[in-house]
Length: 263
Image (cartoon, rainbow, N blue to C red; front, side, top):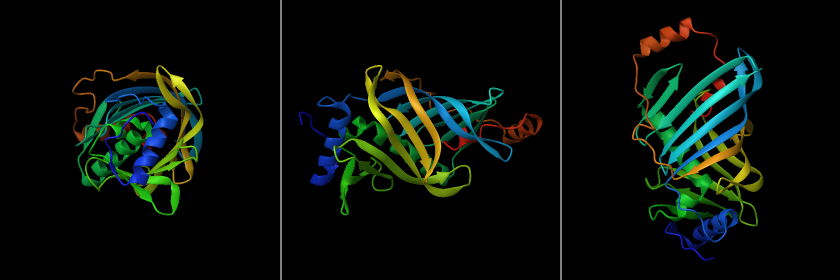
């Protein structure tokens, strides 16, 4: 392999990390500090008690390793439409819906958002090998898996599973599912072949699971490498919570539950 990794860890874990990076990017992994990816696909949604699939457009924005923002637009049965955004600036979770912003600062929300941001950082692989604060370690009973620890120490970690040829198979973390407030495995699974999207090699399809239930399936259609991001990209201004509740009581029925599954 013609590149070095700055990540720390045991020799097996570091070897698997380098093999994973080479399988995705060849001998020249891109330097990724910020990234914006546009997706199209489908997501689980509900109209009242009825589960169904909705068409979804999404934009994911990152400042690696601990800042992210997702903007969703869902279209249910070509009639019902909803939009939802969530962001994490490394310290605070912000959510935006119907023009109203809510900020979450409780420890569980922060921990869950930080874990999610790390899982998605690992999914893009390249930010791991350029950060000397990252640590990886082998998993004794699986020769094609390792554990990746975030720069914040041992408090945030992801399980990384590879195919035999080194290609990434899935990234798994434990975090709270916002739909049921239960701790579950969130799995980011690679599906299909690798493809070039605007100068970045990406999986043809990204599948998002809670445990073994598919919640969202996305196809990347556009990429911006290292875009300049405004300081307020990862935070929305809060509003009075009573105003939000009043607005929800007066508004139409909500069909954006699928987007909240990704909060």
